[in-house]
Image (cartoon, rainbow, N blue to C red; front, side, top):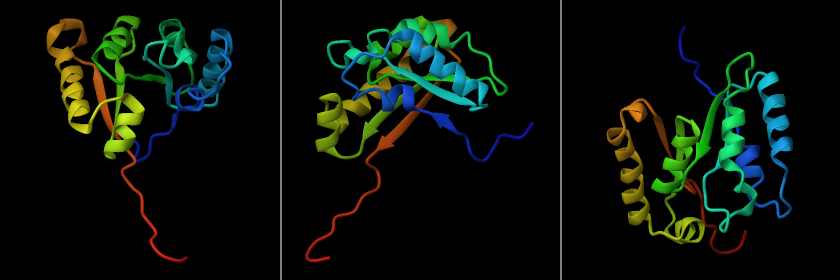
Length: 160
């Protein structure tokens, strides 16, 4: 079967919830993921493996990931999670998720605000995440996707 030209990925469970102040129960997150899978969405970015002190919303990341991996839908779904660093990626892999999303901002200022690292430090962290594949035989086939945030933008100067 040919690979599709466009892949739709639901990111609401990760990106949409990361700024929600009240904790969304694990059961609600799983119900959301099941509904998305039943609708036929082929990929779900299920959670973010950050320390709970950074974003409390993801304190249940391991449990959400493990339950999401049991979900069946018409097209899978493929379960993806965000890991902003090596420790997050290790925790994700230990939970069973094999599709790592690593985001690096091309804006130094945004990257510092987002992950408290310079762009160069994040590149080094990405290399550390990639190195995980060589360290454990069961991780050799993990998929690591590097995404560039704030890669497009413009500045309007003067009067509009």
